[in-house]
Image (cartoon, rainbow, N blue to C red; front, top):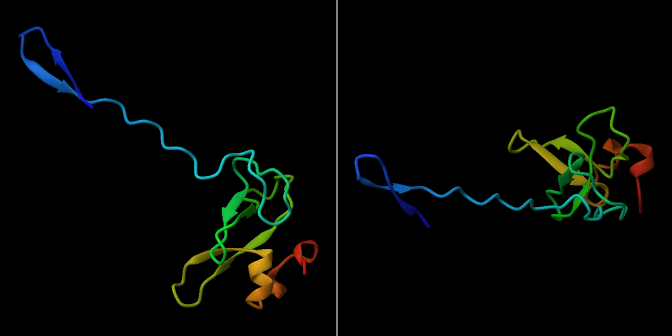
Length: 103
């Protein structure tokens, strides 16, 4: 809600309030939907298939195991993030790193 402020000329203006900070959809302490380890604030992605949040490196120097992939969608020509579980179901296991291929 806005509050009223008087300036030096005794005019009344409406002072906008600062918008509250939007909550993060995923907190850093939340577990990975695939391996169950805690997520960090940077190296994570949301699965296009099931909606789970999983580990995905955004920087190759990060010490995080990938629990899914980023792949191109042939229909939309966009980038899709898919967890290893959904990748196996969709026949994308050949794109997964050997250590992320889980039954």
